[in-house]
Amino acid sequence: MGTLYTEILYRPLFNAVVFLYNILPGHDFGFAIIALTTVIRVLFFPLSIKTVRSQKAMSLLNPKLQEIKQKFKDDKSAQSIETMKLYKDNNINPLSGCLPLLIQLPILIALYQAFIAGLKPENLSMLYGFISNPGVINKISLGFMDITSRIPLLAVLAGGAQFVQAWVTKAQNQGSSLSKEMAALNSQMLYFFPIMIIVIGWNLPAGLVLYWITTTVFSILEQLYIKYRG
Amino acid sequence: MKKIIIKLIKFYKRAISPFWAGSPFGSFNSSCRFYPTCSDYAIDAISKYGTGRGTIKAVGRILRCNPLTKVGVDEA
Image (tube, rainbow over all chains, first blue to last red; front, side):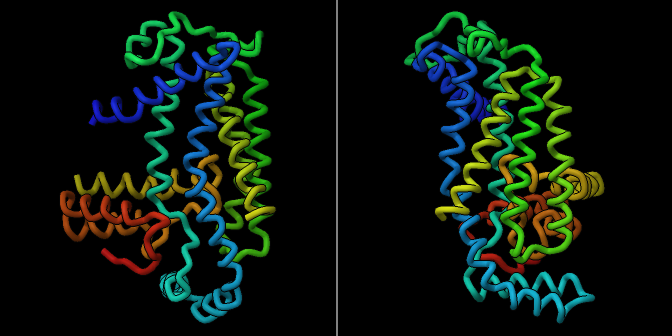
């Protein structure tokens, strides 16, 4: 299991980030992190867009959903069963499901590890033969940011980005057929999650926070794309 | 063993699962496609079939829980 994880996730990602470091102008590891994160999010894009699109189709079913809620007011499981039946009858897939979420966990952990590993010269022996060894990775990004150090300002930026993302999601949800608990959860996320990100990010190396900012900005753009073009 | 695994799943359900909605990878529709949810299904399956077969059934269910399958009721 460990070898499998190393060989199919961690090592390829590590090689990818060093490769990007080699080819990107300026040999900036910060840029390499941003670039690799973007590539991965682009690969996931078709999946995310598919699920959010069917959300639109869902809103058409809203009256029927309300009807079900009224009818089975006191029986939560009957409510869920009827709702699922309604989706099935109308051939709608509103929820992305558990697999896409859980699959992201190992990828996420491997990415984190690859970013940290890239900064230690001894790990460069993990490189494949066809990736040239840069010798030493330059830790300074944009000429002033040591990405191995803690940069609280970046953590605050990550929290800010998270807030915007939660806000965009919330705005998009309005008028959709979300359950009351889900809506309440969303409002909690709006304030709680950004603060949590700042607290965690405060103590993480700036390179990882940079990754977090990139992936959050991508999520925001994805939501906006669907809102205006999808 | 059985009890520990069920406790772990319940912990996941209560403490971790709600955070998916706010994570950068998730969005508001990041949730289970079936009734009962994958966590509840896993608890049912493990109570019913034991740790070994129950876990295999639960993993199979999670693999099915993706945008390509049809939503619906699917009990352990």
